[in-house]
Length: 234
Image (cartoon, rainbow, N blue to C red; front, side):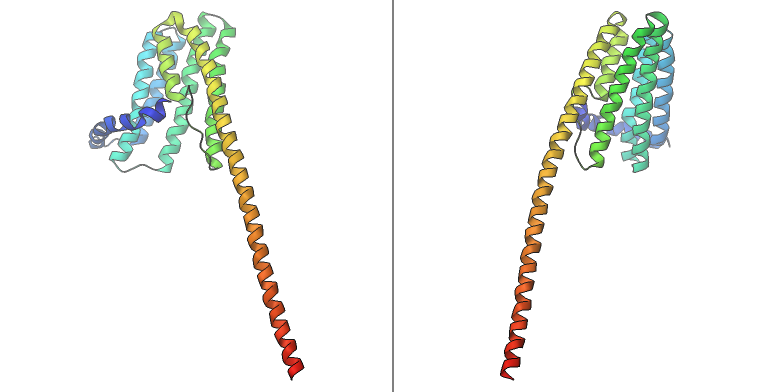
């Protein structure tokens, strides 16, 4: 949701920062690695009960993730390798952060409650897989109520108000499940349309080939007929 509505304004806002970062000699990969280091530190802080400290580190981890794209464009170093690396690190970052929350629950609350952030991560992985598989098939699979940006924002709210962390995570899980269903339905409908379209194309191809075959047969019969007439006249 945020990704679709606010990506363009955010990219415009951070473009000057990307130009400044280019002068430092840093690469987008440096920012990506810096982000995951902050995420690991945040996970340790959260796991040890320092939720507000973890919140600050989560925000610090999000900043490099927001700026690496701006730096790549400013330095003209955007590449498929960089996009792949950034996407993989995003998944690792999410796993580390929610792993920290699970650690906190297992240590401070109930071991069974640790399954809640793990469930969120499991469904989040399904959402990412749905998008990757859909794009591999040439289909579109973006949007939904709880994409990655929303999950990070909601997690930050839960860390800020630690007494609300558990109910907030339950709400996040419910919205994440809804998002996975939304994407499944979105891709399912596109695939149905694609199959119908392909079937129509196949019918048109068969008809075209039939017409071409019929014309070729008529031409061949015409040639044979002329040859027979010549033979009779000769």
